Amino acid sequence: MGTTGTTISRTGSPVAVRTTPAGARTGPVTAAAAADPRTRLTVGEPDPAWVDAAPFRAHVRHLMSVGRLDTTEVALVLGLPTRAVQHLLEGRGGRAARRISPCTARRLLLVGADDVRGLRWSLTPAGAARLALHRLRGDGWSDAGLARVVGVGLDELASLERSERCSRLLAVRLLGLARRLPGTVDDEDLAVVSPAA
Image 1: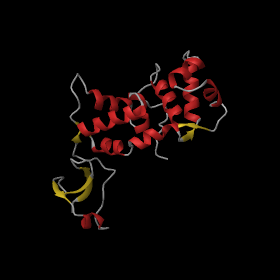
Image 2: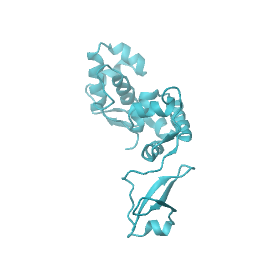
Image 3: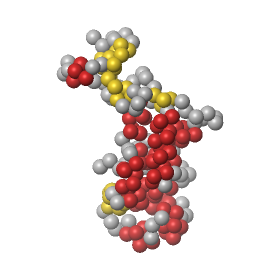
């Protein structure tokens, strides 16, 4: 028997597809067949189909515009590596990416413009932001320079040392700066701050 999995349609919505044991796709699955408990959904497994990158590139650019975020910061919000977002936006060798993986596409669809707008008012644990602040200070950043770059007052930056929580926007801005420090390899050593709570 084959398996049933999901892919992203051209309209950007998830569509269930059935594959044979040999791996050939047999087309869309009806809603009734997808709901059948005997059908195994393979959402976590690799999906052989890739999706058009253009609508997702536009979505990321819109998020950046709405939140006034740079590439590193939007990568943090999306929970993706900075390189993946750079590849989507800029491509490689001057050529824009034509396709992205369904896994990346699903991740991009999880964050909307309202999520990005809400970063300023949403709270998150301050631990990752505090760690980023210490790393930036260790690299020679002054509190006044950091406050100016991230767009907060000195008092809000100073309160980060003793607060349990801080705004997600402050955390995203500090982590975005820290991701650019020398010695930060592929975003692995810094936590992700996403708007989904």
